[in-house]
Image (cartoon, rainbow, N blue to C red):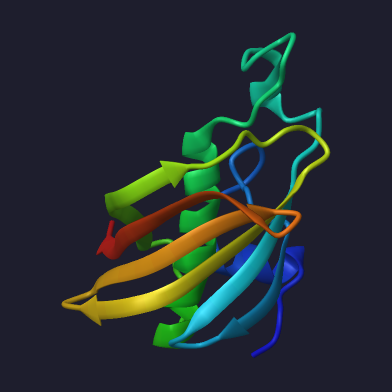
Length: 147
């Protein structure tokens, strides 16, 4: 499968504005990897308070964007879309590192590789880049839960 536009992303993620943090999926290989983008604009609601005179994207939101592309990959790999009766949850974040700040005008390239899936626990290696430079990385664990 190649990429996804916003309409395709909305089929795999329950998130909506202002918490949808993936604008496009550029490429994806089920069971392997995904690459998406988040265009960071000055109009993001968090910039008014983080920080008014030096706007910086919060690191936890960069990790959330990585988790969102990872969730898309897990659903595509499993061959299904989430329904109203289930949701994908974070269950762990390991080895998180923030290398440099992300500012308005940056384009985050969100990359995740599937490390393994055991007993419906998905583990991903994830990196966010701006202009080819890693700005954040982590190992993410998530699972799907019935509501």
